[in-house]
Length: 135
Image (cartoon, helix red, strand yellow):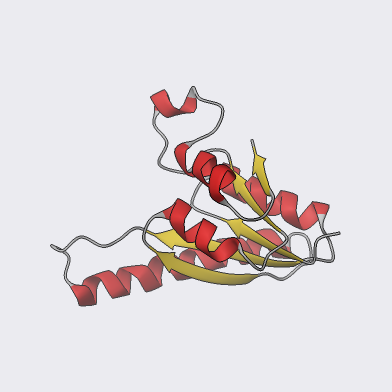
């Protein structure tokens, strides 16, 4: 039985499915939802990018709380900045497992043909803990 699970979440349906899977499969586990915001462009300016990070982080946290509330559960949420796979792998230590969707929100039609997306594949190869990929 896992006591702590890290769930990577973006705006995709598969990420919501991954969170639901983690909550349903491990009802007693402490679940932390990680949403990674890409590195802001130099053109945006620091103040704008910080505001954008806060907005995206709050929207992601709200959606995670909605999915958890449907199951009468609570989740912790954190926001990372940078490359999604790197953030997930760096935070995975200390959790019993990582759960993520097989493809993220920004997948193209060409990427959808593959079984697992680039972020999920990288996390599977590099994470120091077991990884569950939800399709």
